[in-house]
Image 1 (cartoon, rainbow, N blue to C red):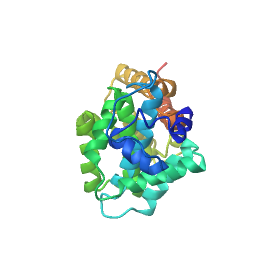
Image 2 (image 1 turned 180 degrees about the vertical axis):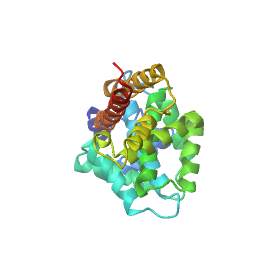
Image 3 (image 1 turned 135 degrees about the horizontal axis):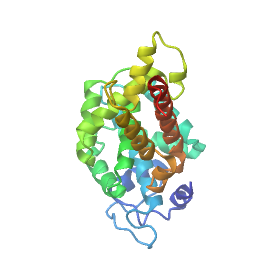
Length: 268
């Protein structure tokens, strides 16, 4: 996490301003120049991986806080979801504290959601795969208590609209994640459920398909999803290294679903 050392050292203050810089400065106890969003120092311009990683870290934990507060209260399950994200990222104690501070900033009634999303979209530099992962982590928080409340869904659609992610594509993600949640994760398809049909239905859902899909559609969906969620590809686009576990678990679930479908259809 080389960007963290630069952050604590204060050397990102001159290059990372705007609303993300303001909320990040509050979280880590630095006084950044909030009025500027221009980059200085050559290697840290827009699109630089470390800069994108800082933006992702800041936006994800603060917007998670805003989302968790959407229905009026932050549930124990939602708090647990935040700690799961931090645990999966293997954050050091001071990084965990910064993440929690960002989460708490997101719960404030004056949290500037529009400004945060606008800067995050710019910092991602059109990298759709990062915005998709951002939405999936937020969706996981909303689903932590077993259901997606209307107020949470409203905010998730709001995030889609303000980051340029199509609602129709996001709705497919919802269905895929619900199928994966029902299956119990990447290993879920290896366990026996009430019927084989239930397991197969979940497997098709993870691939975003129905049982009516052709063999060619199954193969194309599998290859497309494995490419989209390949950990190395996502990290190269700016996903923090610490979040590779999410991408790895995703590809594991996709492969398990495909293997089950392939076996049922006797595909080679």
